[in-house]
Length: 117
Image 1: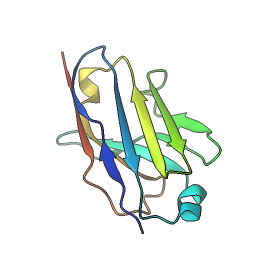
Image 2: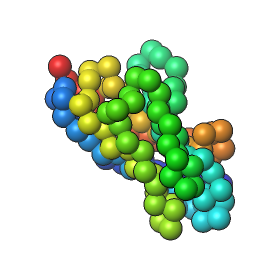
Image 3: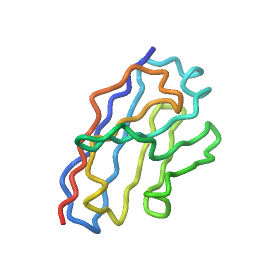
Image 4: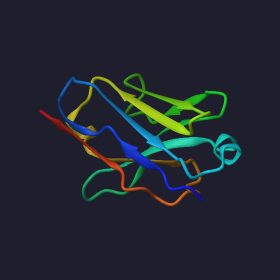
């Protein structure tokens, strides 16, 4: 099983934007394409939570906390998943991880997103 490698996090002011990405390079392409992929996040002292999901054909769903601000996308040929985050809030500060919606891949290191007020 491939381990996702996340990238693109950073420090941004409230109201700003960031795009995080992950690549599951070691997964077999057909396996990756069979999965509903997802972004999760974990803030300090809190449980990891599901943020957004996307099917192979691009149907997406979002948690209420990010709906209208975040957009998930995927590149099936290159086994990548992206999360465009706009209108960021301090409460979006967390480590962001990608995985299948059923968490089938080993967890990667994640990428830190910090939103200052």
